[in-house]
Length: 182
Length: 122
Image (tube, rainbow over all chains, first blue to last red; front, side):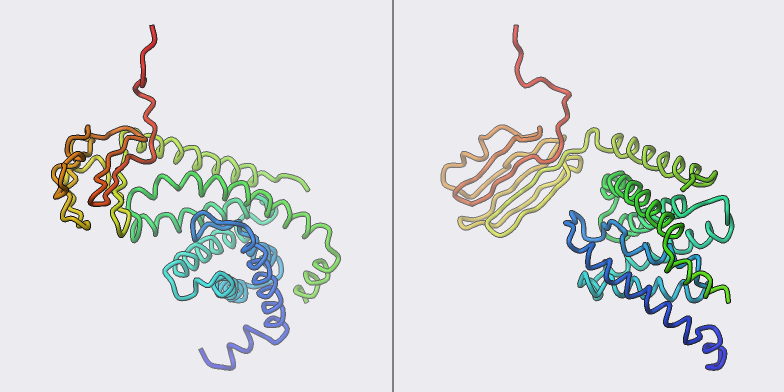
């Protein structure tokens, strides 16, 4: 792909928007870092909030660029950039981003952010646990899976509800959406 | 905010996966204890389900812990009195045995089987 086409995909306006959402994501990672974590790659998923919302205003390539930013920002905040945790987190994030994207594009009005968020949490946890079973902890990791899934389900529900309400109520977000359509 | 059809489906699906793996995890947990071995340097974890001999190097020599038939005990030790070798095999959560001269401590961690009563009252 030539340089010219890249600039067509990522216009300045789009890049600004991605950068803003990426910064939100990083900020929320910092907030999330305040919560204690019994297992290194267990997260509440606050940093996913901008990613979920961005489904409404970003195209495919921009969306996945934001996911990459989110993973990098999260790794910087948590200090896991140079460890295996980063690979797990990246795999989980991209898998769940893909599923959420498919849910949003495929089901449109028949699903809200609640369902999308829950599916994303499920996918992320499954991907990370399957990786840790395969590469690190072996079969004993099956035992922590229910814990992950349970926490993921609850936090997924709350983040989904918040995202939906935010998307419904926020004037600023409404403006972002209208601008994105233009 | 209104729940849409696929929201409910997603919730049910997630819940089903969660419950499924919870049940699966429980079935795994049943007869799978582990023994924690601490020596002067470090801590090791061994499953009770795999029979093996573990040799530990301490200040006075080697201590050998044997794991067999879901139990662990000191098979031999280079300590002077050999009290640890005479201790009963450990197998239930909370059981322990130790070789003090050689600074080795072994105990069973993690699972309460609930299969046995620890005392009978008539």
